[in-house]
Length: 128
Image (cartoon, rainbow, N blue to C red):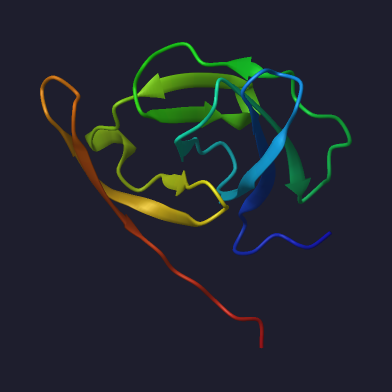
């Protein structure tokens, strides 16, 4: 499958509207124990570790539990929480639909939750 880069681990994430038909959302590269934020996730989400050791089975699907626009996953603990990111989330990886991933630099929203703005930093590397 691959190997860990800079001590990070990789997880495959899938989403579903009904809990039966699953669609690949992306690969989350993160530090061990670090939560991941997902943007625009459907009602159900499931995941499994790919690197450093590939897990055969998917974690039991987790259902949406709020109306906030972002989902915080604690993959190692099998926990999902809908959130408005705050200062304590700055620096965490954010996975977008389609698999692009960046680190959260800032997040702001209106008091009524009708609008929000967030900034991500994207980095890359090549294998020489």
